[in-house]
Image (cartoon, rainbow, N blue to C red; front, side, top):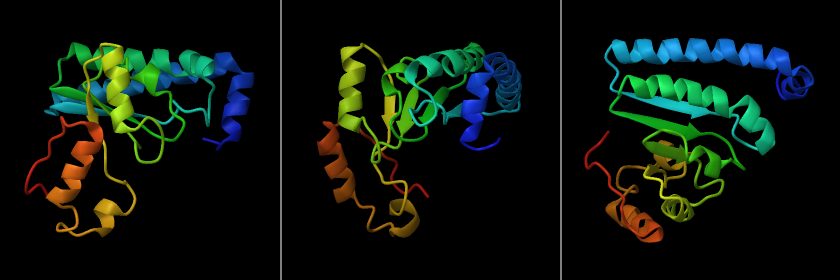
Length: 173
């Protein structure tokens, strides 16, 4: 890919962009389905395009959402244990992606809106049933801190900040 200039070039040639996205979608579907057939229990599906850095919301709905949904529909049909959606970047289109047919939503909640608490409110107000995954700074905390520093006390502060409903696995490595 040609970096950020790519998006301006592709938006000037929308048919070419759609053809490329169709090919990427087919490849992604085949890979995900082959992974499930080979024994994967779940799918981690990530998007880097659901952000105002690359597309406005209308453009995302044309050039991102339909292709994402096609892949997710194919995955869902195979009935994996769960599908985790990671929304990469800042200034994300959380409200739009919260409606995707996934089980778990994850994003850089410490770097961009919404907070975990606000996300929970968005889901509740829209009657959307999803698990939320986040709460630790992705840079520094896990890579630098010792197990002792990632303490129960820190987890309890996060639990209070989000109004509860969080869980963690003791002794996970």
